[in-house]
Length: 76
Image 1 (cartoon, helix red, strand yellow):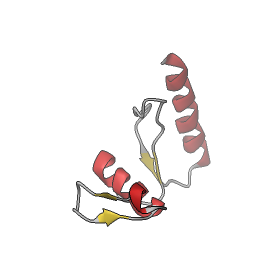
Image 2 (cartoon, one colour; image 1 turned 90 degrees about the vertical axis):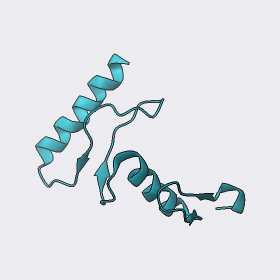
Image 3 (cartoon, rainbow, N blue to C red; image 1 turned 45 degrees about the horizontal axis):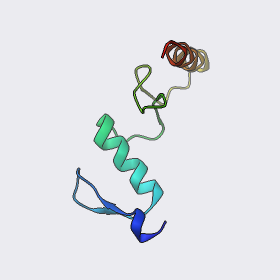
């Protein structure tokens, strides 16, 4: 990542120099969560389509989550 892509976080005031740190910062700033993995389905305008969710081993519930995201995306 080049220096012109770095930025100072509004959350902790630290410079975010890597994509990983920038993604973690975006997650904290926008969703108040810093867990991995944390699933957020967004539309083309970065609006949340369905309630975000943290890691869950239940495959069927995760499939339902993804299907709900598809339905919400198609409504927009």
